[in-house]
Length: 278
Image 1: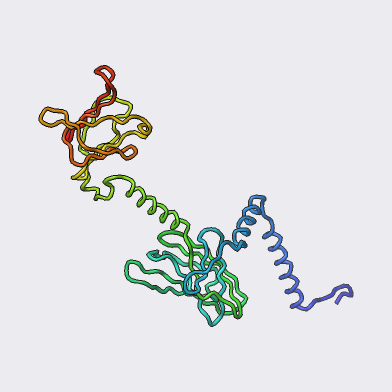
Image 2: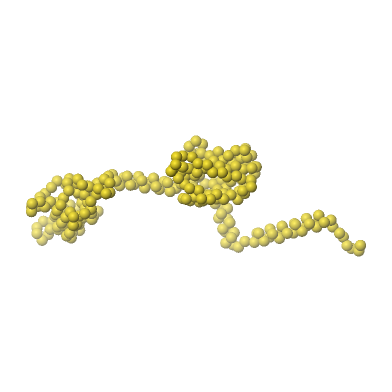
């Protein structure tokens, strides 16, 4: 052997090679563009934020859907029940670590309004992974963590669109109460009326619920003198009982032909004729 030649044990050579390889991979892994760094920072902020967490019924932990990535804490030998919205159909469940995390489906509720439950079980503590659940309505991005003793037994979501939907229902009920005849089924309302003549207050809509006739004027009529209604009967113009509610004139029976008149004198009068059936 040459005096300057030093032979290292094979295990030492392999360890040194592995270290160099890992260092090379690590160096390449850290090489990101400015846009990539910005994107990962945005994602980290979203994943790391706590967001709104409240207590629901029966001890359920409730997250506001879409605000942040919710972090669900589970524990070995226990189960985490993640409940989705009733009627929601699950398409796919994708878990980053499928070896040490098990996710099994379950259902509750009656047919047609069933809720899907995802039963999550970690194999050991100290685990962190992510789960993506795609459904017929939305996509859930959830972080899963395992703790030796602490866990969330029940998890659910509050959906922002539910608030908008409930508000729309309230507005619809208010609108129904405010519009005469709106409480009648749509198929019982008749809009078969024609309106002829020109006037600034010319009715925008005329309809009947089978008992009364409703004549709706432009909102600009408010604060002005309303026209007088004459019903044509037997060739004569007869004044009938009606009442004005805002921009709506309500006549207590169905009319066939009627004339609305505003102004004084032949030349200064505005007239509009209403006919049922065109």
